[in-house]
Image (tube, rainbow, N blue to C red; front, side, top):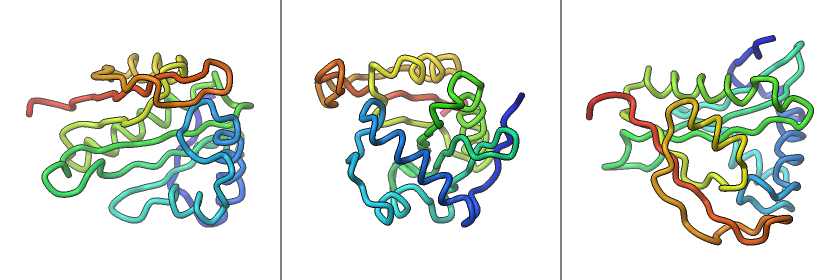
Length: 166
């Protein structure tokens, strides 16, 4: 079953918050404070235009979310970025792939030249492999910059996908 991807609606927040809480409390894939209050999470995750926050649904249930927008302002505003979170119950079912493809398509349609992920935890092998399948490259790794609860200090990859000829 292919996930449905649609723009975030205010009524989605409780389900999105549940996904965010699960992901950041695991402390395995995002460099966010696991005790982040709900209001801070909402302010960080729900993008304002021209950015976009979306949800992924399976059988009408929110099982994932993504946010996308400009990576940096000014002279770097031609580079987009995105972040993805998927509920543990939906992993391995194509949700992350659908969210990634949606974000890349969204960025290309808006004229961005590329997409950059700034902090992909190197031990998050399923995400790293997914992004590589979608054409992203690891262009650098900042060593020992993420405290993983099992693996200790691990690196954060910078991953990059150029959309066309510069």
